[in-house]
Image (cartoon, rainbow, N blue to C red; front, side, top):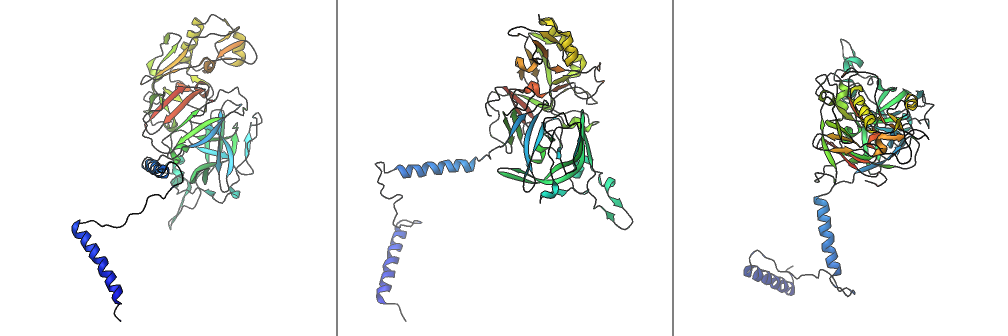
Length: 458
């Protein structure tokens, strides 16, 4: 049935209008416009429109230049002279305290209901244990898992896989690990587990499940250079912290550890001095490759530059010598030839009476009997690139106990001669990092610092 005449007439009228407008203005369509906002009772009728413009531009800038919010966790000063952070592993999450250690690479925690820690009674709190069976995401790492080779090398399969004429049986787990930490050690097995942050979950994170330890107050979060370290597994572009001044107690005060998960357009953090990281030239000791080396150019006491032999300040062909920064060491360590020069210069410039008996009892030296407000020469470390770290007095001279004796809080051992002990000649410990903003810029391979109160959040 043909359409009613009235409908045909309406269609023709519409087409005539469309054709007319199209022919008069090519490639355009003329249609009725709608109001962008309705009548508003406000005395400012453009208020809503301006707000929509503003939010659209702000949103565009966010999408064009979005930088994810850095992950943060709190740092706690501890009575044993270190600093700890809390991390959450497992499903559901189990929270544990870890020593923040930039001088090692493995992340491990006390594990299983049978965990044994020898010589741990002197620490403030006994560590609690992670229970793998209570986590639905916990898995043992197999021998053929590439992450097993992070600790044991590319030939690890020859150590844990049984070969026969028929087929290769590589169903075994990754070998047990043992890690030494100066006075202490730990041993256990590797797990693949979830690492949980409030806004992010990292699946299949490699973590050590330690069954037995010696003189270890808590698990350790390795922040050094190595594929198994926390920064490497999280693919961090850097991390930063500010260590509160500690009194070797369990202070409730905390500061922030900031984990940077994306690159930033900003080249430098405000007022931060930078010095480039240095690679150890030797491959003879794999541990040296895990350290953050810095080029220490000179050490200044008061106005006197201490003449430290250059061969001690830079790693040699065997990897010995040079300076590393280590959050896991309490006091800065210097090999005896360097330490003696520093101690002698303080003894020359300080007019107080030496406290020899306290030196014998404490192991610190030189110590002086002070009265009233103590005054000591400045201590300054100068690095490659012009970065100068002027130490606050409380970072290198401290009163011992409740006495009026102040001692230099830099240590050495009784090994004499360059390179005899091996390893770094200077280890910048956490006591000399107190009340500095410290930045490990991994993307740009540099170390930054700025003097500030760490009671101010960064």
